[in-house]
Length: 100
Image (cartoon, rainbow, N blue to C red; front, side, top):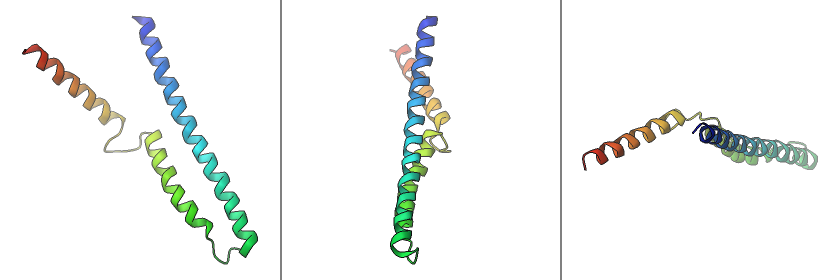
């Protein structure tokens, strides 16, 4: 039983690390691509029209939502809400089996 518990904790930790790696890869790619676009923008028109900000804004919204999901920052449907609902549904299922 103890090995199973350790294995489950290891699997959860590994999944968490994978999620973090994906977020940081997304953030790093965002920084590099937006920086390259800003450089191209500067070299072509000297920032007279900063068109790279459109890409930065659009992709930035995606990065923000990715961060909210990765770090459980959603106050309405966060990790604690999810755990409470899972427990509630498990309890309801257990109670319905008792009465059958």
